[in-house]
View 1 (cartoon, rainbow, N blue to C red):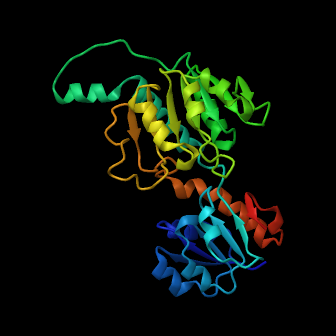
View 2 (view 1 turned 180 degrees about the vertical axis):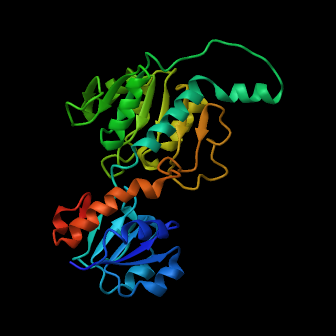
Length: 312
């Protein structure tokens, strides 16, 4: 099957330069923004881009479009586009384990070691030695057991942590036990750290509600690197302000960007990052294996066998 591929990405040249020698029968076009894409997209049958960066204007100007390779795990944005029924959508699910795990550890280590206090002391030239809380021996409960959670669990075990999962899956490596979602309150009650990694849907909307937060210990912390609407944010803010849980690391929010008047900003027991959990300085290299594999399968005429099919 012939492929005329448009890469819409800041590092579009990287994809073209790596894949051109491997797929001499394919045509590769590059664009870095909407305007550039509009000027070269008309004959393309494939577009590869971050899902949220694919404009409707570009899709509407691609009458031959047959396959969208999202360079993201999430493809929610594509649901807002009017796509013909025969367009295939695949994602880059499974590549984000390293960066998502690292940001979870950034939150955990910063919180339990109280990095804010160290930095404040440094600015004042204060030498203050104090006991240090370790991750070793602590329990982490991970809500949602998928590819990212498996990589996070592996790293947690390397730090000597006990790992509990909340999922319908069983027998997953590096989890000490997995409880069903109906037992979520029991699972979070055991945790020093609760990490939210479930996908967002109507079933997970405000999954972290008052009842779940009440089940957490007041010395436990909550990390959300999933989607903002999985948590009832005003209730979480209330619990944090009252120190009914010890802290939170938050990368996603119900409204993004997080409004300047949000009560979460000034809280000393909260670490806020601007939805950077899935990012990395080697993101193009991370996605390349998925793109390469799917392109080979697509060109061999077996699109139904591609990796991470979202829509066929």
